[in-house]
Amino acid sequence: MDSGFGQTLLLTFQLAAVTTVLLLFIGVPLAFLLSRTQSRFKPILEALISMPLVLPPTVLGFYLLLAFSPRSALGNWLVETANIRLVFSFAGLVIGSLIYSLPFMVQPIQSGFESLPKHLREASYSLGKSVWQTLLRVELPNIKPAVLTGIVLAFAHTVGEFGVILMIGGNIPGETRVASIAIYDEVEALNYGMAFTILALVYTINRRMLRTA
Amino acid sequence: MIQTSLRKALHAATGPMTLDIQLDILTGEFLAITGASGSGKTTLLRLLAGLEKPEEGRILVDDTVWLDSARGIQLPIQERKVGLVFQEYALFPNMTVRENLEYGLGKGQSKVIIDELIGITELEQLLDRYPAKLSGGQQQRVALARALVRRPKLLLLDEPLSALDNRMRERLQNYILQVHQAFSLTTLLVSHDHREIFKLADRVISLRQGKISQPDLPETVRYANVSDGTFRLSGEVLQLEEAGSGFSVSVLIGTNVLRVPATMEDLRRLQPGDRVEVLVDAQHAMLIKA
Image (cartoon, chains in turn orange, yellow):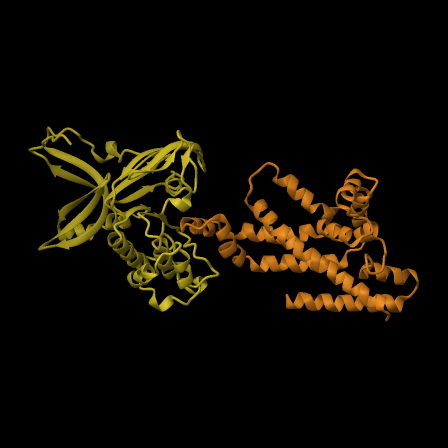
């Protein structure tokens, strides 16, 4: 057990925590809009959000790598204007994880919203409450289990991701080397004992978190 | 006075139809709306509440314009001050009875109204319970009280009692009558139950295919001509009761209720819901211009 091991675990859960919190703020409004809209574009948006479910992670990671690369228009623009480099960096991992875990946050919350009878919100509106007040005081409190499911799934899924991260993050200790990469690395080096230790540890921590949630 | 004129295309189970309604409602009136399912009753209520938009129409409440499609005015439901009660109760499951009621309070509104409503609807014992722990009748009492917290002038009841058994229904009807009078409300009630309508409403309109149908005139008055000295009116028995030394039967004819003297024999033969014909002796029929 060296300091690199602790660093790897810390980084893994940091990534999962940052991703989950950001996803909560992105996912709830998105799920709310999707549950409410009758726009023709709804299926397109839903398909886009679900993309990570059907696309192999390495393929998704490859696309992101191309997009974020300083040689691409987007990557170049980010470096030039904001000096943000998304390939082989923690920020890049967060963006990748956001996209990768988005459906796991959005879908449970969306179906939570859709399962609420519309009379509830109509009653709230008739009592003079705005859409915003109704969302915060009536709708969200009544779909708490769905929100929790979204949080737990997004967190666990981010901890477990591999393909996307390997593609855009590589294996830089303290920056992009998360548990799944470390396990892969140790296995490659025929260091099975170490690989198993990391695995068991991540599994235990993750499980405990799911339990408490 | 509420003046409405509304038009909206609907897709009913029977196919497309157009809701087209001109309706004036007096302040303080208790108006019942009846009609087959899919005839547009609920839509009419939702249009008044502002939960749906008509293609064309106007709603004028006293001197306030709630809706005027020609001038592009459409007051949102939050500003219409209507009390709304659904068949499904629609209480907020995450709040206790008291919290459900207090949720309806406006900014800075005093809580006095809540205590008053709790008293009228007798909710004292239930205040700390969650809706899931209440019976249907109890839930609907809470829903009724909650709908009145903002002191609306217009109360819209969409089949509020259809999910309740008869005994519960009668109790709830009393509560509804009580609040209608206590808060001088104008109340619209969608209902299928003639007895309920008879007990509560001052006036009833019937919707058919999205339009206010003439109260079955051709059927009710078979013989408009009184040369033989009798009217023959067909209607439905609403209620049988003792009246003084004899008995009487209330019969719904079109939108009017006629109380007809009856014999013991009639009472044995008839029960509410029966179709009957009422023969009226009219030797001296007179016309008075309304």
